[in-house]
Amino acid sequence: MIATVFNWTVADELSRLLPQCEVTSPADLVAPALAGPCLDPAIIAVQRHGDRIRAVHQNHQNILCAEDWSQRPRARCRTRAGWALRQLRPHDAGTRRLIVGMLAVLAVLIGDWVWLVGCGHPSAEAFFDAARVVAGVGPAGAPADAQGYQVFAGLAMLSTVAFTALFTAGVVDRMLGPKLIGLVGPRTLPRSGHVIVVGVGQVGMRFCAELRSRGVPVVGVERDPQAAAARLVRNSGVPVMTGNGGDRHVLERLRLRTARALAAVGSDDLDNIAVAIAARGVAADTRVLIRVGEHEAIAETRSLLPMGTIRDVTGMAAGYVVARLLGQPVAGVVAHQDGVFP
Image (cartoon, rainbow, N blue to C red; front, side, top):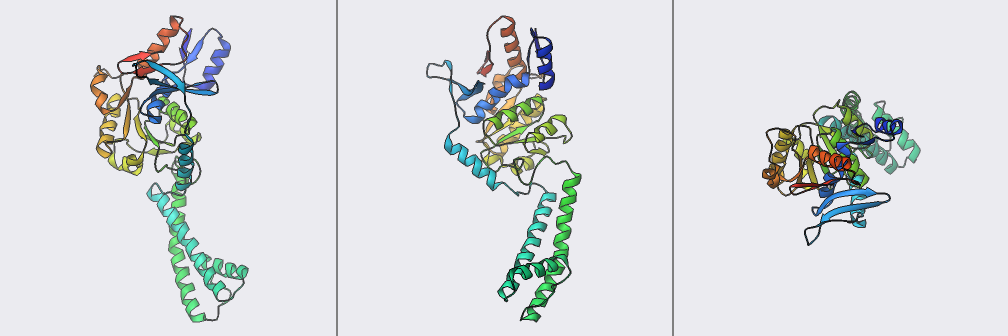
């Protein structure tokens, strides 16, 4: 018996209850074939075998072969550096207000503290007076040039009112809105060398998990912020932007020109093609992967090859199931040119 189940918990329980049943998922089958071209244009798919990662590619004799693959140390260093640089990066108007307000209040606090310390006040006393200015209470004492400092403290207190309002507005916006992108931590938006996944459904979720396990920065794009898969991807540490993946403004905010690749893996083939065309218009040199083959109007995927790498999820899943029904020992399935190879 062969069953396709997306939920890992249900799949494990089904395997336990029915030992003769082999449980898999089309999303799990196609994720390695989608991740391969994102890692390297010459790689068709990457597959984990125990503790090793095998990369499938075409050799000089046009024969598919698999070799051990590991991420280069330089690529790992770039990934860590990129993670540090993308912290506290604003991605929308609300986040921008929050960061501007927070940095402005911090600048007023530091400026007042430096002024008082420069006038001979002890550091602790200077910090206490600077905090009073930021809070709008006013300093407890005054330095030797009291007139100049009083003017500065008055302007600082008035400006802090506006900066605090900006900060509060940003905090309220983040508390009430969907928290799909973080300001700090792993769910911040990457700046370069990342993969943009448009359509965070079952396939998109497994694809994001596959890329993260390979150490590749990834960001998802989903129209519905309340989608179940989007919340699951967010919980796994992947940032998800709400918007239309075919919108030029969204692609530019996601830095498509510096991205490693874009994958349009939504459930609608026509939407995926529209996203691929928009991506070509924004950054013609960026690698594009397209999930197509399920729409009745798209019977010939070879005509789409100039647009990017094509992956037919249904065809790959069917090839795997047929091979297993015939009793062949199959660990995965790859798609290359016009064929599917278990």
